[in-house]
Image 1 (spheres, rainbow, N blue to C red):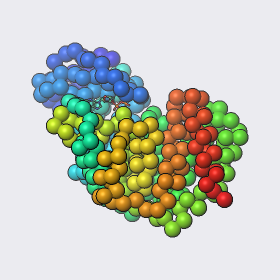
Image 2: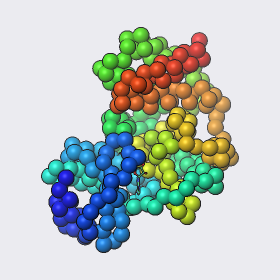
Image 3: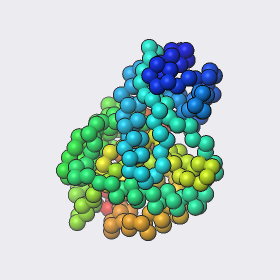
Length: 292
Ligand code: ADP
């Protein structure tokens, strides 16, 4: 990517002067990430091919709506756009420090505040991506319908194209036929979600403030964010206790965890391949055991 092109673009569009040199940052799974220096201080730069512009625009819009919630801190958006050979997203550079129990507690309480931001319909006013997979956010009045159609069925169709065994696909269909049981007497609010809250998407500033980043924002059941925190670990009991103190969960949430995480497991199968098949099948087995 021509850093010169980006430099010129940033100067023209936002008066930011880059000082040259870009240091690669690891830890991401989709884009190339860098620390770049500017006259205004360091910045976080994500780069991808020009076709990723829509993905970055949706990420920027997600970060902005999370910032407006004034709940969990997110990096400020500096610029988003495309030059000849790359799409870019530039964010405030955050200096991360060690995670701590106190920060986990703050994150739990702040996430509950973010989830208190609700609206009447599930979805969002734009589609976005989960990883690099499209995520459909068509506004829908009914949560189980939204989750089954725009989350599970969407990933299932992709997974079938990506070689999901027919027996596993049939199990997902069986699950979808019976899933109403898990929503018996449960009508969640349409809460503002991070949408991709695994342990690699949160950090703590050097002054102890928790920060979430790399979101896949939409309005949905708050339990989906909490379910994802349990998928790969990285959140301790202080986080869950503080969340539950701020906003207790409704009965039955333990069973829905597996259902909600099936979305992310199918997405991982679609993004990263057959290494995730056993986890998809394990989750299905458990879920089908719960259901009559
Ligand atoms: P990807 O979209 O490729 O998954 P991420 O947004 O997760 O990339 O960012 C990759 C890594 O960069 C993160 O794991 C985190 O350590 C670091 N990072 C993310 N945002 C910032 C930021 N604003 N300032 C400094 N480092 C960041």
